[in-house]
Amino acid sequence: AKGAGRNRFSYFTPALQVAALNRMRLTNDLRGAIRANQLRVYFQPIVHLRTGRIHKAEALVRWQHPQRGLVSPVDFIALAESSGLIVDIGEWMFRESARWARRWRGEHHPDFQVSVNQSPLEFQREGQAYDRWFAHMHDIGLEGAALVVEITEGLLLDASAGVTDKLLQLRDAGIQVALDDFGTGYSSLSYLKKFDIDYLKIDRSFTRNLAPQSSDMALSEAIIVMAHKLGLRVVAEGVETAEQRDLLLAAGCDYGQGYLFARPMPAEEFDALLRSQRVL
Ligand code: C2E
Ligand code: CA
Ligand code: CA
Ligand code: CA
Image (tube, rainbow, N blue to C red; front, side, top):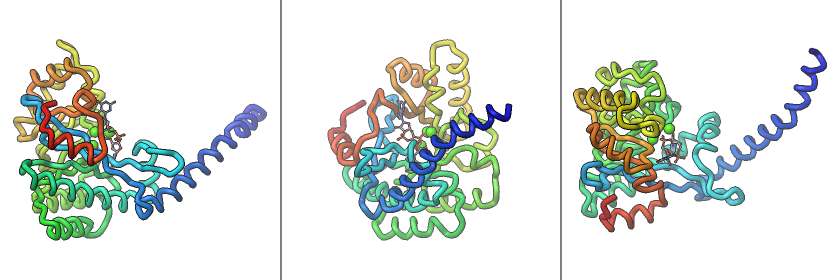
């Protein structure tokens, strides 16, 4: 057993070292990414299901790495969180989102909203983080209603005073809140009543399994009915087929987001799509 343990150890060590080194390099590169202008904001349309019109967009970060090419957030958000860089990335994403939101609302889409993601770490960090946001919004003349902050339900579970206070700050500024990835965690509807949440985003693992008369279909219908009773609008994520869209529509879902409508795209491309007013 001892020998096997040693073998296992020597087998894993090089791989672990390579992974650790890789992580270190990537973290180092990420540190310089903002200043080197390597971050990109992509937008994915959020479509009003009944009319097919684009009402909102979710801002999603990408990293244009000089050697690695376009890096997905899946490959660097965790690093950004553990290194604390997520705070700077979040700030950068907020500014970009605010800039584009102001433009689109000023150009024939007065109710347009841009949704920005916040990691629990960003959301919970100490200090008057949102003061800088609000000051910036004031500077560029953007109203709070232009923005939605997406948080995950784990945050609401450890309902510290800090979380409640931050949600109130957003509310006071007119910024709306969406509960992201609903259906993946504890998915208790009880805290939807307790906290002032505006949107429920049904996770794509749910959307994927939608079929007539399936249990996921019944569950989705129940979630949507309850969300509406509590005054929330519902966004379904990961809508990939026309059948999924039709089932969601029949279940009373308000909005859809997914490859059926469009993949996330560079800001300029989204800008052109919105101008074309094409119904998706
Ligand atoms: P998320 O917030 O759940 O974002 C939705 C993800 O689903 C995006 O992945 C999007 O490209 C993908 N998606 C959209 N429609 C479909 C579909 O029809 N099928 C499938 N298979 N996927 C679809 P993305 O852009 O790779 O982002 C991954 C995650 O990274 C996000 O998940 C979010 O948790 C995080 N993230 C992205 N941008 C930011 C950011 O600016 N700040 C923070 N804190 N996290 C971010
Ligand atoms: Ca999200
Ligand atoms: Ca999500
Ligand atoms: Ca997710």
